[in-house]
Figure 1 (cartoon, helix red, strand yellow):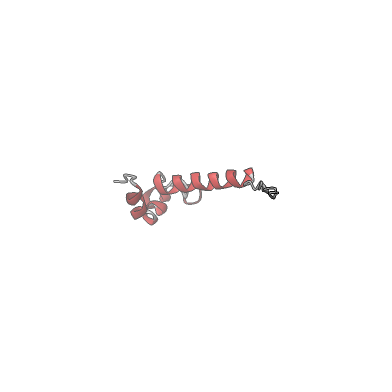
Figure 2 (cartoon, helix red, strand yellow):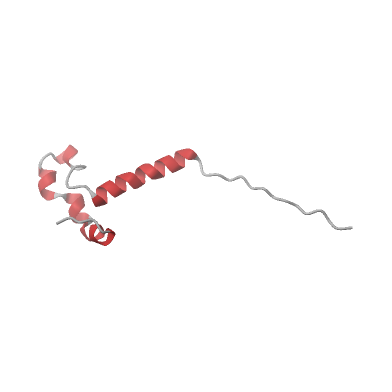
Length: 71
C-alpha cells in the first residue's frame, strides 16, 4: 500500500495596515527625493526653505541617479 501524501497549506498574509503604511512612506519618500523644492520644510522655515532647498541639496545626487531633472 502506498502512503497518503500530506498537503500543507500555509496562510501567511501581510496585514493590510502594513501595506498601507509602507505605501505612504514610499509616496512621501518619492515626493521628498523627486519633487520637493522646499515644500516640506516651508511649514517650519517659511520662505527661507524655498531659497535653501534643504532636501533638494541633501538628495541631489540621488535625484540624478533616479532620473529626476533638477536643473
